[in-house]
Amino acid sequence: MNRSSALRIGLVATIALGGCAHVAYSPRETTPLTSAAAAPAPGRYEVRSGGDAQAVAELRAAPAPVQTEVVDSQSPSGDEHVLVAKGFVHIGDGYYAGVDADARAWLLQRAREVGADKTLVYTVLASADAPSPSLYAAYYVRFKLPFGASFRDLTAAERDTLAATGVQIGAVIGGSPAAEANLRVGDFILKFNGEPIRDRAGFQQLLRAHMGKRVTLTISRDGAVNQRLLRLGVLAGEPAAQK
Image (cartoon, rainbow, N blue to C red; front, top):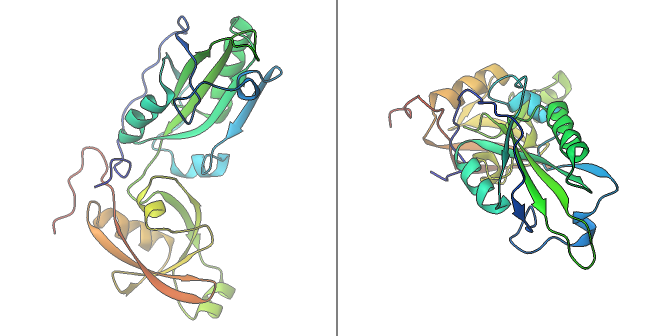
């Protein structure tokens, strides 16, 4: 199973804001941040693909915490690798020009607004182009990722057009089983292992009953019907379905 496919559900610990660790890494690479990324004026929040408010509300594993867990760290890419393996999804990034209390308060307020379970804070070192250090924060939410996409019931018109029942895919989370199977927003899923999908509730039941197993989905995209093979993730504390 891919490391990002499994879901882990757990309680969110809370810790007080601590001191900054000094790093100069890009949130997506291990190369120094450029002045454009390092010095917003004064702060900005960027949503990552699949991290919009609706997707977070539908897919998060537990209600948003009263207080986000805040960790000062040094390696954004390394931290993301570890957190994804634990079922966390990187939903957005915060940047603030400065490292004072105002900067940290601004980043923490963004964490509350987006409902982050975990917030990792990094200090971006000053450079020739950015003479003052700044703060960068990566926001994570623990998602339910046995499948990794939101979906809805079909309308009566859609059922008539498709001459079938099923569900339509909404947001698809990067690194999830749905993403690895190349499912896209707007795809219609018509069958599960060759059997028609009744509705959203029925599809949810099938996903839970087949956690950890390889399954075949029949999808309709732009009028063309084809199949996708994927291995579903497993909820923490629950065994995979018997093969």
